[in-house]
Image (tube, rainbow, N blue to C red; front, side, top):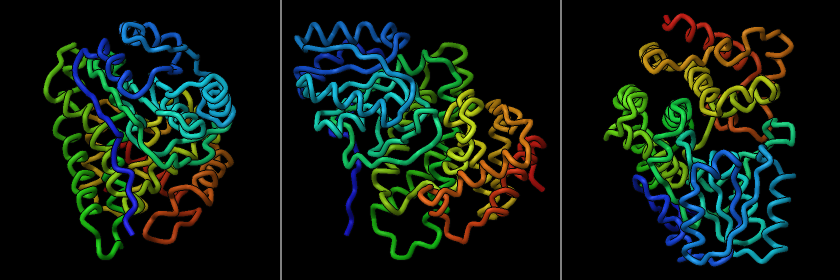
Length: 366
């Protein structure tokens, strides 16, 4: 049986459209709770005004900074106790994942408004949950996509360039991991074949467009290549997970990222995609990919100035004990590393982490 959660119920995207948010929300909700932070609220002021102009009753709530069940339950209770019929999340991945999970628990409509293109969280039907202290805890399946995904590309374009660079690294993982998770899959159905095609496409697009897109962002010139990269990070990458379902799974790249969260103070100096970028190289080593494929990826990292070495991530003083804890966390029984098409062992992961760092620093794999 094929059981897929492919896409948000409604997907609205455009450039400089934030003042249309109210009109779109009004079609599905009359009373909404908005979750964001002080900085983002200032950025989307026109969007909030549009809610008021559309006669939508709304209340602003402030995110506590972590997508954890403590925060999810707090928001869910606010939704249930005050009769809201929808929740609007405006911001990055942790805010959007919190909104998706809290909205699901409260049984209300879910509206995601990404302000950065750093992950496909606005699209996906699962949430990455952390402990109150910021350590990876689990992936929570919310059994639905957002009722509305509203993407203003102007806001994403004007965000610090570091976010979209992290999104590029995270999007590269779609093919790095999909190639591995589908390696031994027999009798691929049409949906899986489409997902594999899209994962390959996003990978190729990042090689073709990411460098020039980042350069044009620095020049403050919105161009077609930027549009392609933004759409790939949020739309196409999200679609891979939706269409691919249980076949196209995260594997080691994301599990390695989760492993590093065991040291949240250092990990949180990074963005999710940056650590996943390191995990991509670890994944390729574990998969025994050919030298050219690994070298091409590391070369791209250099071209877009993505330093995802241990030093670049703030883990240059990694002790043997720290490395052991990171590996063990990556090997947590419920994590994605077990989707690998081969037997995974502690020493394999440890050696791959050290080798990945060496390759990234040298810029070449021989």
